[in-house]
Amino acid sequence: MSKFLRPHHGMCFQFYEGKGYSADFTDHMGRVIKELEADPAQKLLLKAETDIVCENCPNNNSGICSTREKVQRYDEAVLKACGLDEAGEISFARFIELVKDKIIDAGIRGDICGDCSWDYICRDKKSRYEEGDICC
Ligand code: SF4
Image (cartoon, rainbow, N blue to C red; front, top):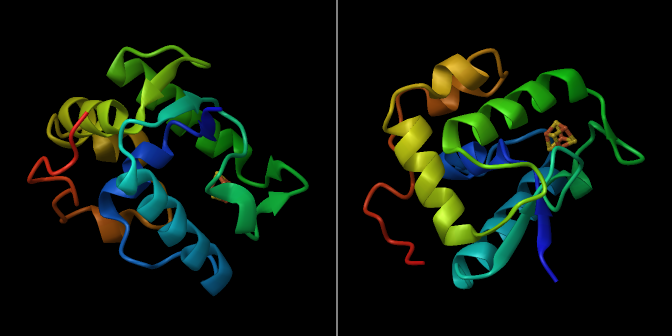
């Protein structure tokens, strides 16, 4: 069965360095990324809803993100930039590649999520997938 992923988390994965809303949240996010990277062909279902990353987030109020208007805007912009539809299935590797090519390398990340409180982490960094080490 495909895992749910909020599209904008495809950007967060590119710059993850173990920081986040709480220790529980960052530990969990680190585990999610590790599991996805261990099996890059696995399918994701892209939906603008709480997902596998949101599970331990203090902003997750019984399945509703307390910043939902903002993150939904990010989700919609990521889908648009990548030419993808919501509820579409895609492999983790292909999604990561599309986000890197169409958003990070295209220089539009800041236009999409420049008002995120974590923007300072991502602003001047290279994607963790810079070397193209994930294969479809
Ligand atoms: S802030 Fe919202 S979208 Fe981001 S991880 Fe937390 S619940 Fe999920």
